[in-house]
Length: 161
Image (cartoon, rainbow, N blue to C red; front, side, top):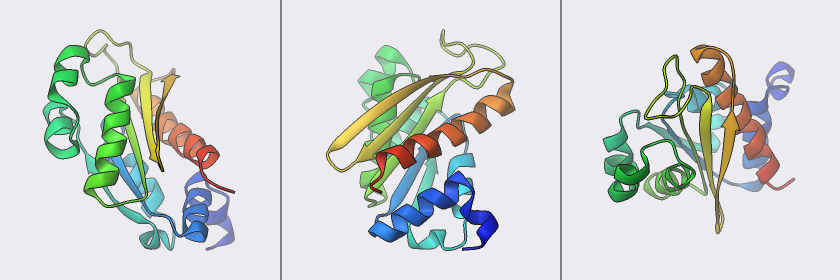
């Protein structure tokens, strides 16, 4: 990889995945493909990135990712359990070692009673499926961009050295 690319969070994630022979799949809602686009912008990403699913509409989270429709009916799309099921679902459906998911409200208006900036990240790594909540500020673009940055930062912390 080029020296400049190595400095980016996405490049660091791709390098760690490549070094450990791991693959990744991404399920995105509020980020609308920005996270997987950041990963595939790294030279050599094709060795580790299996793909991404943009399930922006709530019903697609169930249809494409296997999120429990009853859970979605009960709590909506912005919830830690939804993020976890999205991550596990994309990992299984795209046959990857790791699944990462983003769901939340980017604004400018609240969504289903959730304020802009309320975001849940899901991570499915090995036997662990976890969710991390974020409270982000700024406009829609800032919330979406910060969600991508935080996803990569948190993922890097969860990966082996």
